Image (cartoon, rainbow, N blue to C red; front, side, top):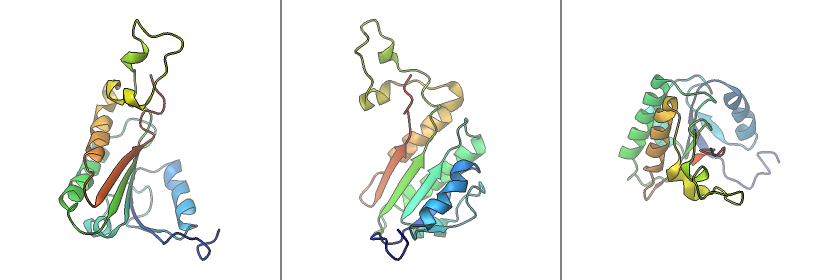
Length: 165
């Protein structure tokens, strides 16, 4: 499907995350659909300008597959704080955090005395998870994203806890 044939309207996407495979692949995927990436070059690690965030339809944040640095987490919290303050503006926005899988060190319900071979894990076990100490900042970032939901701001975390226990 070329951008001219796409039934979707182009979306302005503000982005922020470290360099890596995701930053290399995203432009090819999103721009081929006619979407516009705004701000600094992808994977530069530079925080988006407030004007880029406020004009965007989607704010895409991602974390690399290792525990994130404190500087990156602080900058992402600053982005989220700006969006919190602007969530009453009439423009609808979506915030998407592509998290890594490291925040799940264990899930106590899997290791309980009553667990048997038929015990399965579901999304309901989300609140039971325990993280590695080095990922506490990442869990706080995920929680901050999830608190953003409002009348014109929709937020979600993708890939959080896909690998249970």
